[in-house]
Image (tube, rainbow, N blue to C red; front, side, top):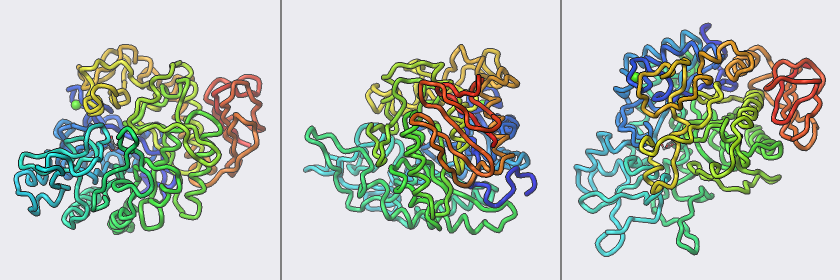
Length: 557
Ligand code: GLC
Ligand code: CA
C-alpha cells in the first residue's frame, strides 16, 4: 500500500484521475497508433504530474466503429494496443508508481462483431441467442417500419433491420447493438467481466452511459413536435434514459466491487458517466450502495461565467450533501471540444440561471459552440484559470490527456481523416469528436514522438505544446498543472471536504477552504484586488496585488 501516493482507503474521494484515450496517448512501436507499451513508457509523465489514478478509455478488441466504445470482446486487449500480458504489466507498473487504474465498462451495447451478436444474427427470431439483444418485429403491413421512432445518438433511426425482417435496437451507432438487460444471462456475463478485471488488479471502472441500460419494455414512441421531430432530451420518465430499473443493476455491480474491499489493494470503485441535469437527478446514482462517484457534466458544459459556474457548483454540493459521496469535476474528455478552444469563443457553454435551468440546450455531440468566433489566446488564458478552479473544488477531479499541455481542439482535420460516426450519420453536417482525439505531442521534433502517419493527423504547429518543450517552462501549462497537483497533495484544505463562498463581486468567484486556503477567479473585464494572504499559485503573472480578467489564484491565509 505504501506505494500509493494517497494512501487511504478513501483515495477516490479526492483523487485526480488522468484520462488516457489509448489510441492517442503514446505510441510504443512506431505504427502511428497509441498502445499499452506507450502508456507503460509514459507513466512517469502522469506520476510526475501528480495524478492519483489513470482511467483508460476502452482498450478492448473493437472494429472502432465508435472509437473503441464498440467492444467485440470484454476480456481481451485490442491487438493494435498490445496483449493481456502487457495490460497486467501496465497495471503493475502503474501501481508501483502509486497510480490506481480505472478502465472503461461499456454495458449498454457491444460491437456488432461481438460473438454473441453474431450468434444472434445466425439464430432465428425468438431464439435465446436473439434475446441477449433487443430484437423486435417491425411495424407496418410487412414489418417494414422500425418498431418505434427512437433515434440514434449519432443521427438516424435507432433500429436496423436484419435479413430475416426483424429489427435490432442501437441507441448509438448501427454497429453498437444494445444489450437486453432483462435477460439474466447478460447481467451474469457482466458480473463475470467485472470479476475478471478486478481479479487482475483493476481498481475500478468508469461506467459508460450509466443511465441507459434499462428500457421501458413496451418500447413506446417518443413524443414529437409539430414538425414531427422526435424529442431528443432525457426528460423525466423517458423510456430509455435514467429509468428507475437502473438502480438494481448499479447495486449489483457495487456488491461485486465490495467483495474486494478487504483485499490488500483496497476498495474498487465506479465513476458513472451520465449526462443528466440537474445534479439532483445525477446524485441518485451515488446513493449509498450504488456507484461511488459520477461526473458532473453541468460543470463541463457551463458557460465561463461566475453566475453559471456558481449555480452548478452549489447544485452539485447540495445534491451530494448528506449522501456521503464527493462531487466529481471534469473540464473535458474524448467527447467534448477541448477546453482551451471552447473557452476562447464568444459563447462558451450553457447558461445556468438562479433555479438551475439551462437556457441554452446543447446536445452532447453538438457542434453548437463552433459557430461562435474564436480567440485562441483568450481560450488559453481561461483554460489556465479553469484548471485552478477545478482543482480547488471539493471532491475529485479528472484531467483529460493533453489538458495539462493546454492543447487546443484540432478544427481543420481533413474530411477524409474523420473517424467519428457522427460525421457519416449526420450526413456530413457535424464533424464530431475527432478534434479532441488527435495524438498528443511528446517531443518537439516532427512526429512529436509518434510513428508516422498517426491514425489522426497531427497539426504542424504543435511543437510548442509538446511535453519536451514545456518541461521546465514555468510560464507554461504543464508546470502550472504540476504545481497545482503538488499543492493539492500537500495542502490538507484541498481534495475532499467543503467550501465557503466569499463575497467578492458579481463577476468573481472566491471561496475559502480550511485550513487557510483561498481560491479566487476573475470572470469580469476589470482587475480585482487579491484577498489577504500569500499567493501560492496563479494562472498568470500577477501585478500590483490584483487579479486580471480571466485569471485565477490560490492563496494561503
Ligand atoms: C459515451 C462515450 C462515447 C461513446 C458513447 C457510446 O458517451 O464517452 O465516446 O460514443 O458513450 O458508447
Ligand atoms: Ca503503436
